[in-house]
Image (cartoon, rainbow, N blue to C red):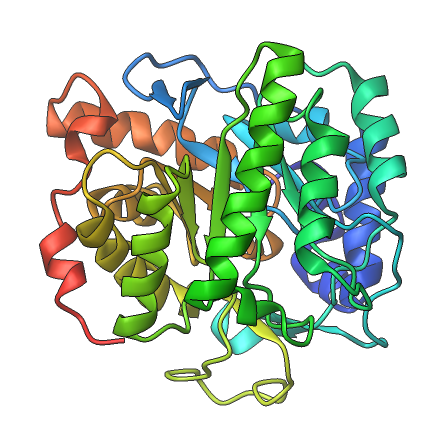
Length: 362
């Protein structure tokens, strides 16, 4: 660990309220206080996914940079891409505090933030001002009190089409009541139809087709996975992100915050999210891009996601425990692992463990 994280120390940071510590890390990135970690370019890690060229397969997941404050500094930590949001059309404060809880015994986090963000207009202004050259996705959602949630997603496409490298429709947060109902087949079909029609209309104006990904929950039945896969393929969606946080608390070591309500992320999510990832890969076939998220804490766990069917991977919660040096360490580690496997590109390792993971029960 280095820079901001090591100077304060894990113990010092963890004495702070989690939201305060998060705000301090954003401020440190914005001010340039955190040192950059530009990893050497390794062509073996570069991939073209959904028409976009990713310099390496590791991204920062949505949830950290909700308001597009630091996408540029995040890319300088070694990430190949980053994702801002979730952003909603109107600003909203989210759920009452406290709403983030560290599970120190499990290297995990529970959050029930509820899409707290400053709204479309603020995030758009920041992205325009940043003039970024790297890959920055925009994760879009619906306001809690919206009377037409599908319309909120359509507004997200319209607002950010000129600046987004790709879109993620987040219908899987457990912290907005009723949001996960959009994963039901009929609702999902209506959402995908509306979002992709708006994306196509914006593409006509911009002469650029922006990929749209769908972020799903890990807490799905086999039948639910069947329905999502069928709708994704029927609508020619550009890709999936698997997965969001889980409501499950299975396998946790005893700790004082284990029973807090909200979504669990971090190391304990790895097995479940990777199992769901592999099951979706088997359902959608080899062509559809999938981003794997959940419990990525090392080069080895990142590569295992790829072996289970992911084209790219994202992390967030594990950086809470490992600090800002983690992305650079993972990317360098992936280079070492690819060299050890003696393959020309990391994509050659994709799906090599998909059957083993897909056989697991959920």
